[in-house]
Image (cartoon, rainbow, N blue to C red):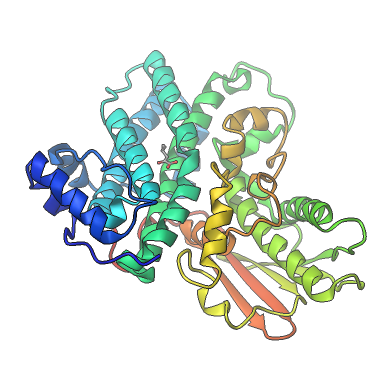
Length: 448
Ligand code: COI
């Protein structure tokens, strides 16, 4: 479907028009844009003075180390301080993204998926900005309810955004579509991190073992958690857990006659580092799933060669290398590995995405009450949501680009080297000290 350039270039222009003219302009724009199936209801434009005030504020990025030091000695004033940080930070971060979206061409913003997300974000912005200062624990409980409800409502954001950027790339070009998706996703992770961290701290504060007078169970996993952050993520345990889930999924998808490659670990097997388990599990789960799939599809029923995972602990970083002999990556796909918008099979991806109304991209999204999971003694999630919440054969084209965003979020990196005809080496690098700020900006220019 070809979408023509729109005579109304930006929402800013539309905002300056009186309602009757705007409606006429909208009708003309949608008619000329040939977007009938996706461009249905004009988004309700709103005056942007309030938004301007919030856009003028700068976000205050934080590091894993700051988050964990802050939450380690949890007192009531600290919990309230955390609530008020989140209370001001969420509308600020959303306001910046709303402003990005408002600068999209008219036909892009009126795409049904993009405008669905814009509406959700505007609703959340309005709700969050009106929350009064959190002065006591009752206020905090009310605020936590608002947070939980909004987190839940936003589960539809990822598949809708992914469909939106695939559909609007004829209007804004694939590079801008990609930039938009990456900017919005990174920002979404950042908002969910601070919201979920505050919810988890609140849960900890109310739990029986929090008070110094209470007797703690000996070496309980709660000692190692500060909110959502697990101070001693063990690389080996995480890889084994992801391997078990990815293997079980492959067995289900390919049936009992297909041999599944073993996953062999080597290197510094005792390595631990502070991290948010759901983030690392997402990345490793996706990488292993890709490797298993490649090996099975390349080798068929024959005895498959193992997938080798090497853990390397350096002074500043942990490096995890995943090597498979799955034949490498097709040359036609290689240039688009990290892209949400570019590459072949766009229509197939759109069809697949349409079957996933809510995508659970992290552990918390599967189990919003993550603290419950900690208190039940689980160090890591009881299942891998990104992998298990959708059929394994469903290819959304999002696993690798999304994993890269997660890896870079805490100042790490993800690279992939394809050895044509032989296999692939994926290199995941994690900052070991947790002292790097969350990376809120996307290279290029979209961020404020
Ligand atoms: C999102 O999940 O899309 C968010 O913006 C998070 C926010 C509701 C806390």
